[in-house]
Image (cartoon, rainbow, N blue to C red; front, side, top):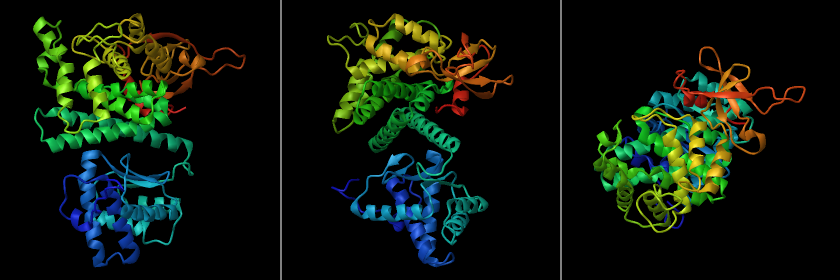
Length: 487
């Protein structure tokens, strides 16, 4: 929706009580506006509140099971629903203005609905949030908590939120956005045939989610790189698509790509292996070496990726980027690889090639164990200038550090720790931030290995790396729960 071609705003009659399967992001703002505006005029038992309450109930029942939550956030004169920035018509800007005013009066920056709500819960929320003369954030927060409803208030960005709270909020939002991308991709590839409208809807939602991830990368690189270490052996394709997108966006940011180009790169990376959806599972999961017939299936997947992407009716610059990446990501820097081509791969393809190989090497596969991150980087470095662009490869190692996130290290103290951030400039590249492991295998505190002892020497030193699998440690889980992701 844009101001040049506005659509009529969604009304209560459109949204309640029919329970439509799809609730557009702008409708969340409109439903919220109708609810609090009606409640500010009428008493809690007034008949006029029935339809706004029903609309709120139906919206939470439609969105929360599908997306995990409903969030409406105000930031920098914009509104975001589940991380998607709303594009509004002139009439909707008037509604947004009153929503901003409602938040400002209460010291709020937004809210999150964490579970579907019934009518009694919505009315209890209104009682706590609207039908009280109190406007202080802490009092309102306490009232909402006492109402025992799945509704959480947020302070404005840059407000009085404590640093640990802000870190937890950013981490929660980042991992939620990552999980959303995984679920969307899994849904897209699960069906061999899908109605065109549903396919387009999922692709558009993936593109919006990638845009949200680009914003996370631009604002907090250490947290972003931590996301890329998430693993699930039972759903390798979806996590691989998401991880390759994250690593590609991070590399693209390092070389100075614009926000638009980063989004195009990220979406191209998500779809780089989409052609494998047609490959038989017995080939993809074969533990033995592939025979020539199997190899044909694998080497055809770049072309199948292009065929899938060309189903879009509207050709665009973004689609061209996706097609190039899908076609070229197995073509090497020195001209080898497949499919054969006479030109050097595009810069976006060269980025995705590095991200693709690194994530694949560090993941558990049916025919081999996962390769620990520092060893994987060493193996890739040997092929710099052949398989990989040497400049990008050097930048990638600098970005991740000698001990990339997810590396299990042993310190000279005898302690074990999982690297949660290892890139950057100077000594950070060899002296990462680690999450220590207690004897129970759980997180036991964060150490910054760049800290110095009182005498000026190193307080801690890495003496070796270990295989997390051999010790039964899930590095990605520790990274997700670590309090030290953000420096």
